[in-house]
Amino acid sequence: MEKRKYAVGAAEDVRREGKVIVRAKGMEIGLFYVDGAFYAWRNMCPHAGAPVCAGPVGATTLPSDVYEYRLGCEGAILRCPWHGWEFDLRSGEHLTDAGIRLRGFSVAEENGQLFVLL
Image (tube, rainbow, N blue to C red; front, side, top):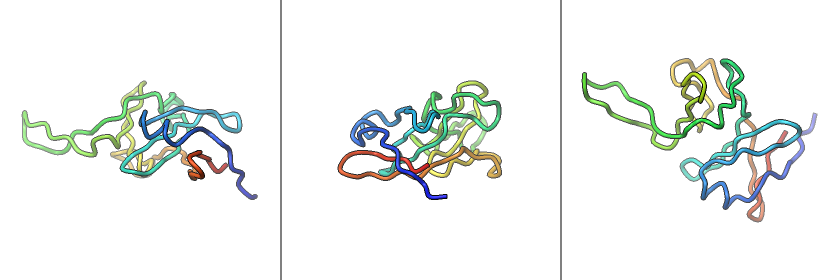
């Protein structure tokens, strides 16, 4: 089955905001701009169906000594608003179980417009 392009918004809006939640083909999709690239993830946590894309984007805590808190992956970690599961926005993978991941879609930019391929 051939994938179809759905216009989902202006690239500049996503660059400026960092994330935008849109609808395409009857589903909510979170568009993210991380490290100079666009990513699209279905707005549904694989754990309990939460609107994962509504969660905060930030960093994660790296292994460190007691009372030392080192952060990593700043601006690339999406935290589910219901149970705090963390996902890498660049791969969609859960941070502690690579077998769990967000459902992703290809993103294309054409003339300042973003499209997702579904």
